[in-house]
Length: 227
Picture 1 (spheres, helix red, strand yellow):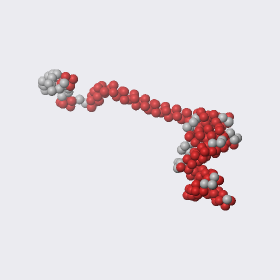
Picture 2 (tube, rainbow, N blue to C red):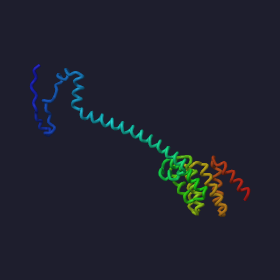
Picture 3 (tube, one colour):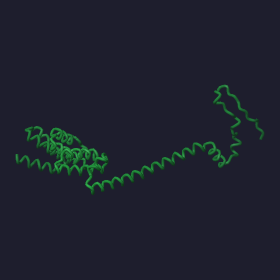
Picture 4 (spheres, one colour):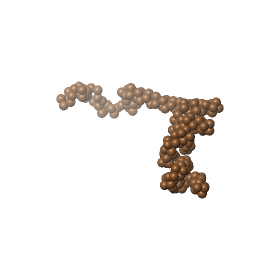
C-alpha cells in the first residue's frame, strides 16, 4: 500500500517543545505486523535505563534489609555474651551503665542495684535502680525497679523524693498491680504514723479494691489489729 510520506508538521496551537514529529510514529497497519517479541524488545530498548535502575534499587533494598537483620542478630548474640561475661566477672554495674535502655542492661542494673542495696550503698543503688526502671519500662520487673528506687532514695536520706516516687507508682496503671499495692501499703503506714488518718483510710480503700493485692491486704489487717 502506498501512503504519503510523513513530515514534521508544525501545529500553531502547540508550543515548539510540544510539536509532534510524525516521522517517528508507527502507523496502525504497521503496528499490526509487529510481533509481541518485537514489542517487548522495543519497550526494553526505550526503557532499559529506568528498568535497570529499578532492579538495582530493589536489589540494594533487599541486601540492606537482610544485612540489618544479620547485624541485629549478631549484635544481640554479642550482647548476651557480654552479659554472661559480666555476670561471671561481677561487673554487672558496668555492663548496665554501658547498655542503658536495653532489656539486658536493665536486668543487669536491677541485679547490681539489689547488691548495692544489701550492702547499704544506697546512693549507688538509686542510680542503678533508675537505669533498671527506664530500661524495663514494658517489663514485669518495672515495678520491682521502681520500688527499689524509692526505698533506696528513702534510705539515702531523700524521704520526700521517695514518697513522691511511691505516689507516682500508685498513679501509674502500667505497673503491675502487686507493685502498686506495695507502694500504697508503705504510704499508708507512713500516713498513719504521721497522724494523717484521712490519707491512711484513702490508701487502705485503694488497696482493698485491688484484685492482686492479697498479701498487702493481709498485712494491713494485721497492722490494724496491732494498733
